[in-house]
Image (cartoon, rainbow, N blue to C red; front, side):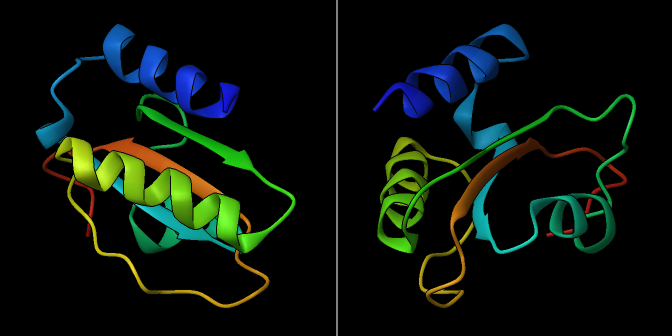
Length: 94
């Protein structure tokens, strides 16, 4: 899945320790990243990809959780088709 490679490259280019990143899934990734997690729109390190199914998004989320990212699986519903990562900072919220 090229989305995983894109996301891995982004992590590697923006501070490659997976333990410093949070992985999740969302129906509305903009709302989730910027409102729920309080990621800075301009300076925050974040990436997301949208998939055809929630199963694909969950597979990507699990991949990054298994790599050591913070987060928890099992959320969302059938409309949850985006997987995201953001680098945690002192101002972000899990």
